[in-house]
Length: 260
Length: 303
Image (tube, each protein chain N blue to C red):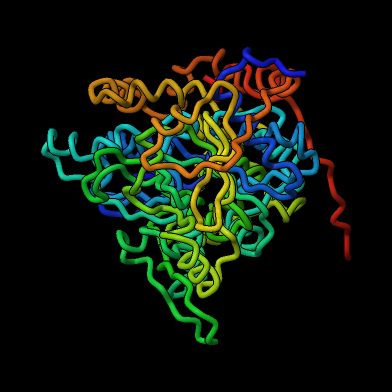
């Protein structure tokens, strides 16, 4: 049952991102929006999903959705608490992570991500948090999902700094780098925004495959810094179900921290 | 705490107050500010609000880190004022030096430091701009002919501070919950200060040796400072005070408000006891978690 019309763009984005995790087994959970999307997936389309947090937890069962991803709730009831060395060394670099789920400040058409600075590195206009674990996650998770709101400032033709590599300048170079340098991952595969869902085509470029209810192609073009590729038949993302909305509003984010 | 910081932290030192969200020794950070230490290089994966406060307190010359934010809230505003173009130009003060890695790079640096190796190799940084802005991240050829990986140099802090649930008087230290890289940072350091919620008898340590992360052998001072990690948390003892992290954002956006906070909560107090009293019993009680005890295991007696 759909509650179409009675949901926010942020709720639609979180629901769409969660559904993309159907069938996945082990997910490395990034800070911010990925945290709520992954926790929603665990309660809906991916009950067997193992949640991995960079703080050093495998198989987390968070009972609440905390402000920070290093919260004590990810420890209590987890399968295993590890040192960060083991988490990044054995689990990520050892090849056990299926999906790395990241946020970003800037992204380009090839899925390269900037979370470091806006402007010049030495004299930045805005200093952003930096890599955290994102750089090695982008390289070693089998595939990378990104969730972020789109705007001309965030979906840019050229990112100011490449913190975490995606498909570089195109598929040939990216494939060559991955095989020559021994990356474990295939790179970005999904980008979910407040307006739609993108996957990556054979040219390694983002392609709009689905528009959320109420979103338009014009709206997409107005919030993206390049002429986006669009699928021949763009789908409409099914609206959030009542149950998905209940989980977000009642169970996961009663304070509305993620959905405002 | 006063004696430990006075004796073991020296101007110009590289100091690591580690703990990933969990077990961050705010008490030690505040004491360093109170004693007006200067020209420190502050190392931490996630500088967090503690280094924002310490930078605002004027103790730091340089920052070594991998994720510079207030988790779930936004930026670290006092630190940003010392890095970003406009506020740096406006203040005329020298910008804070930064040396930046990824999380695994920072963990690897402590690991190389702790194991006395010249570098730590990792499969990261390929096609990232990070090695371009940090020349200490360098490619290295495998001696076995299977390609290039990146290397980071050892990080050996002059002082590492670790907050923990409990330790013996000799400094044997036990932790449960998120382990971060405190163990690596402690073994990498020249001097180690352990700050604990509770001092316990040696027999308590010996009854559960799997939980000991740091032996007294490498510990220079044990400080008993209940609630010393607030507003971060101690698994099983008190919750993360998220309200504090949210409240810090508007305070830290304003330099005058930031300095007023440091005056009220650091300079004008003589230590953590006064801080906890000022925080109030109600706030403290509100952070107490419910119980979730582990089962116990039997180590067996072998005589």
